[in-house]
Length: 458
Image 1 (cartoon, rainbow, N blue to C red):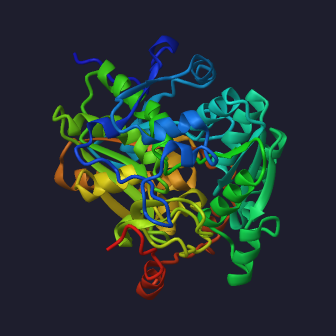
Image 2: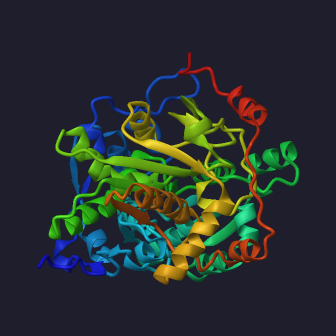
Image 3: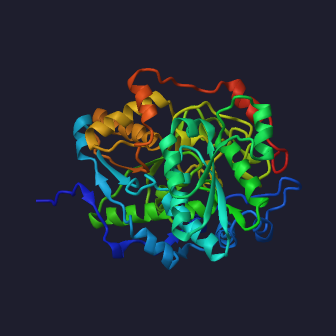
């Protein structure tokens, strides 16, 4: 009799990966470099060092090294909450009546409640090793800000967080966790920076965006001695650190000789999907396997499905380098939806290139459908998922229901990147029937794209 797959597949402490995987090393077409907005030249490490930590800049620009050793202090910290389990969703399968086999990698088992701690602890380590006093950052729903405040407390660094205003107001408890760990939290756009004042003048009453918060955090970092800016998604270095998710998932699946058919993750800036799918994409790039990948984004901020592959500013204030990505335009500010972590106008250059080359599919889903899936999952599996993660749940359920129609026994694996216990205002609105879907018009998309910079674009 064939052994039943356990509900949870755990690796032991000694099986935590000791290296991060750099998918760029296996990409035939490398992601386009960050360029200077003035004349379009590719940025050098020397030019990036005043903004980001020096060692992180080396990781950012390295397209050839396949594996990077995880520093011992980071690996030691990982052992407090890693390895994370790969869970067989037997109860969800039963509720759906599907022949599909569904697994999820659960990244919410730490105080930050999400996968973001994987990169924040690495970035804080490199900042401390450089002798810096502190770091600045932005946060959307608050997972990244929470994770960075934890990491900075561990390494005794100051932490200044600019939180997207709509999330700052919707998620006060997330804000208080950051403050508990010693971070200063400012709603963005704010009156504390020149860029924040300009954005408020141009967009009175705005709820903000990740692009706005990035601008403020960068301005503060470059104008404050002993500080650097750190980012929770988008950058190559962040996808590198988050690869530990996919590497652990690969090892757990291999334990029981499980071969996935479909791998799913939500898409905002790219750390979630990129970290989870990256090592599996590496197998495909090397010709070792063939999987179907689906990245899921909110219909209110559809960078992949309705954006343009072009160079654009990563921030609304237009002071950051230009990245080639699928973008809605740096001046596009999405509606105040509850997927706070998926409100970035662009996407990781790595994922943009892989998508452009046809390695994965992107889907946009509306938030009421997302919360419907979230409640289905919570009732079946006993975990309240984050709105961001629930985008992946939505499509995982959709794919499982297709299997129910066809009778196919496909194996579906998705990344459950965080918990939703700080998102109860959103669940309240969904349960009371007051939640609505907002999809930007073609005119709004066109307006944002019309303002793309000419540098680097045809």
